[in-house]
Image (cartoon, rainbow, N blue to C red; front, side, top):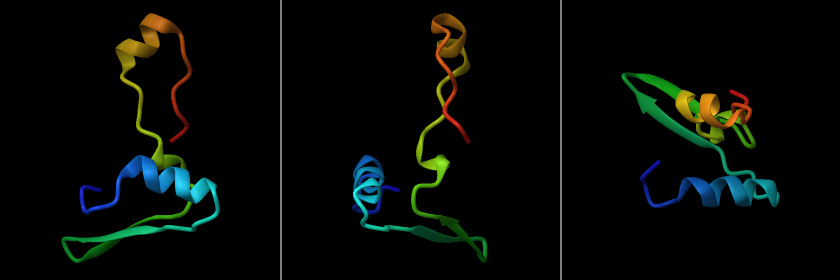
Length: 59
């Protein structure tokens, strides 16, 4: 994230078949975000869920 490719663009392009996978090295460990992983959807704040009754994004 914040490295020249917008989060929303990656999500949209992956839904169109681009197969963009993100990976980063953090403290010597590689962290991967595979194509169409549910973690591409940001968590909705708890107070919004309580107020509106919408369903939390799958994580």
